[in-house]
Length: 296
Image 1 (cartoon, rainbow, N blue to C red):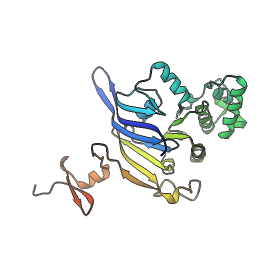
Image 2 (image 1 turned 30 degrees about the vertical axis):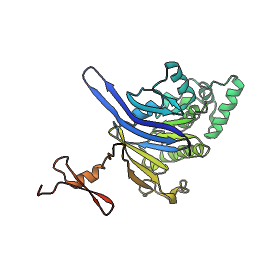
Image 3 (image 1 turned 45 degrees about the vertical axis):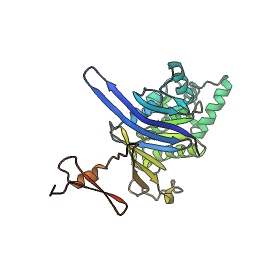
Image 4 (image 1 turned 90 degrees about the vertical axis):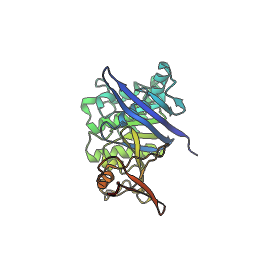
């Protein structure tokens, strides 16, 4: 069996101010295996960015359990957390201003976070990464000389500078055109084929419909998963497929350890409920949900 890269159990995050408490994560459970390419989706405020920041070591959980690459993020000291962020995870931000320093060239940006011992080894590794993302011809370019898509490709190379076990990407195609978005996704796909574990947060419908596993967060918990249909698995580069409208995935509602599920809002709306009570029945091996009968 593949080893787990991420294991979150009952993960809770509470943000406190003087007057209020906000429950950003409400007992989230998720397992991501080593070598998986997984997308994380959800509306604003659903908790997906909070979860990504926790995995990246940028925020601390309030309760539950979070293990990443056999490292327990609850028990780490500040020194261990610094090493974890440097060696275990690589982060690609949507805002390229957070990825690249404007006064350095592309190759200097990639070399900066490396902890290799010699400048020669750092440069060799940086050149290798530039070639991997198709940007070797721009190695001496600074931020203002690069397009948004080129900056994002450099950002991926920076995130890979220390060969992290886990690559995190927050809306990596959010500010580029569809053609560039496809190119960036192809880079992630090739990295994944080489064994890189990748977790992407995205609102890009076309990108999410290409990913083999898509996890949806709603109200701080995993609500559903979509799995790429087998017939589409080898067709990711076909330009004839409209990935925005094609029905490429099977969707499954996730049942938590207490047997609870989140019913999709469109189904709740179709029930025309007057309050929050529903009836559950097992009919011919299927769970049937109905609103209260008029007699009741």
